Image (cartoon, rainbow, N blue to C red; front, side):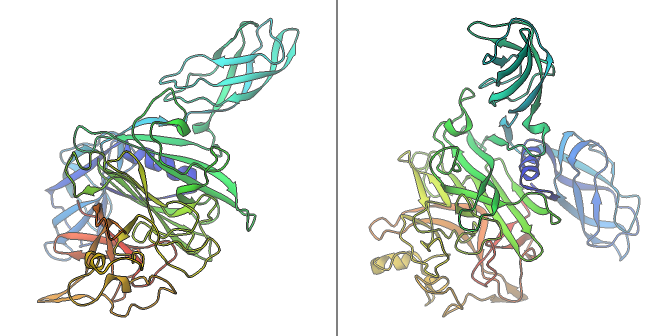
Length: 525
């Protein structure tokens, strides 16, 4: 399903992911009453239901212009906790009137295993008796409690609690209702209750999200996101970002950072590593974040348009299963996590090589990521197309085990046989798209529109994970519905084009808009 929208900041964007991924959506639409006065391109909104985002329907053709609707498709699937009417739904909007639609509803296939629900602060509702300064008050109740929230008694009056401070934030799927009962161990008072402020109730509190997907088979998928703030040590700006992860399992008793088989990347201050897969986003300003979600039960594709009035960057991420080339034994858990930076304190406004995208996968020397996959050897493998320096060197030398074809050239020491893996067979190498070193400029032989009877077809190449070692020649898998795209003919970020009945939308890799630095996502599936 596809869903677009606008949010205020990096925290609201994570809420949008949670709401869309775990809600029902409109999957297909059939015209019930064609109505009158519509034109192709009208966008109609589905009426009814309880939703975070309503579904919208795009009018494709009409009988006459204006006229009755002849064909239509789902544009945005929406996010519903209570479904709208499925038969004769009276849609609104567009230039016409009286159209009704028959809808089918589907689940996106993801369930929430943990959504922040951590304590932020508390005030005393009832002081109780017999307490001492330094007592630990443990919150009682809640649903899916991995770790209970704990508050320290800071001040008392005659044995009654008068002030507390947060000691342990806890992990909850659903929090208890205020005032919450507390216990104290091993010895202490009784009767104290607290009014707790939880992270989801605070617009400024950091949050996490762990989702489980069904993968369309018996294998379950676990992906997660942790929001954080950090100072950029070079420019003293504050970053408002996501740390993005895959897991090999889920244990409710463990913290986010301690989950089973977590991929690299949690920010400084949580664990020692500062490299991995990160989404550089922003806090609230005059410029909102526009987003495009492409969710199936196998993977989540996220594109966020982040601007500050001077620059506009497209931050992207891929989270979930690849389309593997191996069998279920050879590739039993083809999980891939990819984002837009391998550097935890990257600002959304930074330029290459700190900012990249899932169609190019640039990386920074000395920092791992920004893309990872879980191999059949039960190890997280780094995917990176370059090792440019952190300060913005123009170097593009690839020195890592796996790269994302075709937006890279492997190491120059490779044997000639390796070049055959990354050649198009018609006389020019993919290596010309992004040089092995130097400034990525106009390729010596540029990929062009393909001449066909009746018009030109755009050349789309699935973003494919391959080994960069001549001795290996391993082809791991493809990113589902993500394509390297040659942006010839004036195609720019956010524009769409059709190939037959399929619709594709083009995005920049970060801040890069050269013809060899775009990727496309299939919107109709």
